[in-house]
Amino acid sequence: MPTAKDTSKRLKRITAVGAVALAAFSLGPSVASAMPTDGPGGQGEPGATVVGGTKAQQGEFPFMVRLSMGCGGSLLTQDIVLTAAHCVDGSGPDTSITATGGVVDLEDPAAKTARSTEVVQAPGYDGNGKDWALVKLAEPIDQPTLALTEDASYNKGDFTIAGWGADREGGRQQRYLLKAQVPFVDDATCKTAYSNLVEDEELCAGKMDTGGVDTCQGDSGGPMFRKDDADKWVQVGIVSWGDGCARPGKPGVYTEVSTFASDIRAAADKLGG
Ligand code: ARG
Image 1 (cartoon, rainbow, N blue to C red):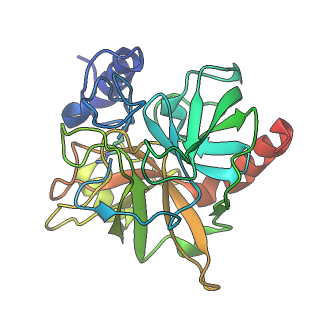
Image 2: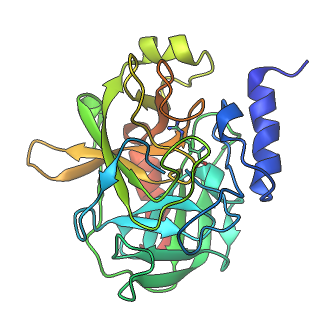
């Protein structure tokens, strides 16, 4: 019998080709696709959105990017998007992805779009942990970028999440960017929900007791962030996976940015960001 991990890996492979929405069953960072969408660029595409959120204001999170495969991302530099490894298909030249930025409304004529030229998927990525990737763009999206957290000191408190993914489990992709706040969940508590948690590489957030607020299918790859001591946004997580969305006792799991910050920066330097 396959273990839960084996199964989630297999599901990922299936969903990666754009077959079915498996959100509710995924116990690993699977790309759920073919979600209905009411926004452009979402049809039949993998992704995750925010449950229990409200609309973000234009310009509130200028570093937020929507990727055409149905994922979120953040501007690490103006021409490099940080997203999830499970949102991309390996490393190398890749002109298949379109990034949309500068807007909360994906149908806003002011949206800036740029094609990808190259993708870097985290070295050693195998579906457990290491869920980060970079997408290099052919031209810059002229918006403020989001800094990576320098160390683990901001892995606590309340975090902001944002995305164009589903607004409930099995829900539609969104036209307007949604945002919400979720509290940090420590590894020991998160382990009670997910025995396969990779503690050094993943970080959990959500309302353990009530649920109701979470990222969801189509939010994957997008940032989880908070203010630093200088009142500047810093990225602490990348939307990765969860059991369904916003269920009590089932927090969202995010790539632990502090663990990978130096690897991510080195990979970006190599891309010429
Ligand atoms: N794997 C999902 C995606 O590809 C992200 C799911 C996040 N789930 C959660 N409950 N926080 O879009």
